[in-house]
Image (cartoon, rainbow, N blue to C red; front, side):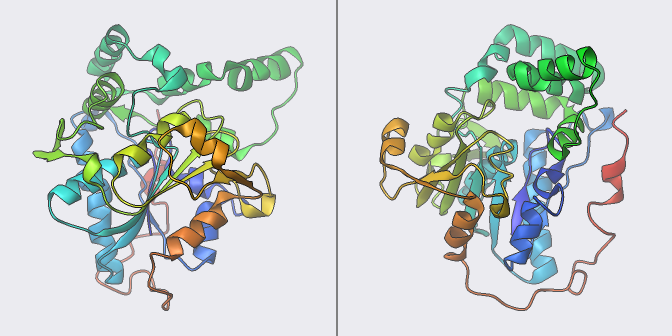
Amino acid sequence: MLIVPAWINKYYILDLSPANSFVKWVVDQGYTVFMISWVNPTKKLAHKKFEDYMLQGPIAAIEAIEKATGEKQVSAMGYCLGGTLLSCTLAYLKAKGKNPIKSATFLTTMVDFGDVGDMSVFIDEEQIDNIEQQMKENGFLDGSEISAMFSSIRANDLIWSFVVNNYLLGRDPMPFDILYWNADATRLPADTHSFYLRNMYLKNKLKKPNALKLDGVPIDVTKIDTPTYLLATQEDHIAPWKTCFESTKLFSGDNTFVLAGSGHVAGVVNHPDKNKYGYYVSNKSEKDADKWLEGAKQQKGSWWSNWDSWNASYSDGKIDAPKPGSAKLKAVEDAPGSYILASNL
């Protein structure tokens, strides 16, 4: 299994602590898990393009997994921007006549950017011009700028509650792993971020057949016929669930859509032992998101178990787990790698 996290925050959102680690849970279910840990770019990497993230991210990872395990196909999972990159990767591989991904899971992922919800207040020509000017000077967009933008969308939860409790009332904030992760922001290379903002958020080109080229190859997400599991969350302020639902109309394979409770992070990081939030599923195919929800059944617990049953149906059964470093790909050091500890300054 290959997990492709977003590079807007550090990769470890799916591996925060043993009590809520998706990675630990899927390993316990019998999966051999590989996860991309993105380098936090400096000005030296300002020239890195969106296609570089694809070629040196999931494409390179799939090749590395084959060296490490001998397996020629993987089960892939992309989270948020990592899911958008995964959709590009699938379309790119399809155009190249390759099929190394047997099943694909998209967590709170937009492919059609027609309605980006609250994020739309930041997306127009003038604001993108300002961001590009700032990135031109630095070579990247600083993580603090991104954090401020996301926090302003949920100001009551992520700004004012801390002002009241910490500043006015003098209370120390409760230790909370998700908020720690949220504060561990990353930089975004100038060329990559500009491509993403203009071609996807502003012009919505990804959903249009052959409107985008990656590595010189026109991509068409409508030709993606890989079985997909599409997870959205009801209170998502970054990837609205109805926008995520639009992917079911784009991908041409067997699409399973699931709607979890809560938001962009808490709805995803929801260990079955917590028995929180629940999720909606439906066996009926609908073109309209509201009609889909009307016919869906609410289930208790976490979507993780539902996903495991779905993904297992595309597997060939269990074998003995490979030992890291025993094949053609040698182990370098323990995860997550020493560079992940590099300062954000």
